[in-house]
Length: 115
Image (cartoon, rainbow, N blue to C red; front, top):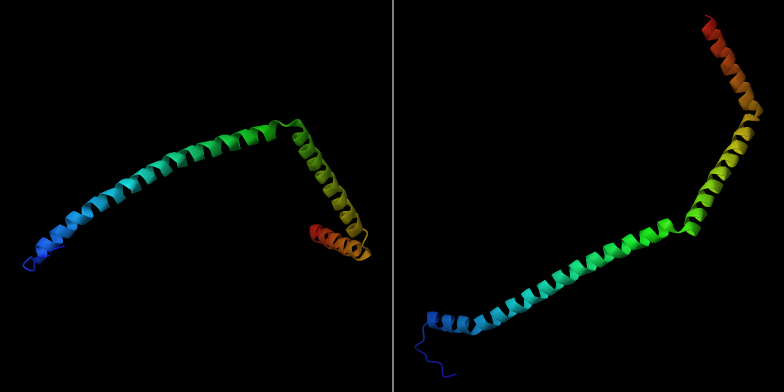
């Protein structure tokens, strides 16, 4: 490039801005196209995920085998818990020390009520 030594800083600056402007515009256009593509794809992806999740939940909730299995497991869990709690309560109540403490507590309470 035959640069002229008498060019001022302003002239050089304007020449370089003119040279960079098309590249800047190209970058802006490419970025906007990519953002539009990602925005459209993102919306489609979110819509697909919502539909897929709704269909999966609907299929699971209406599957009789699955529902019966869950009901059976809940029933067995409650029965086991109640049985185990009953055993624990019986073993605690059979403790002679506890019986004596409860007897003393009831006697003390009865004395306080009578007074």
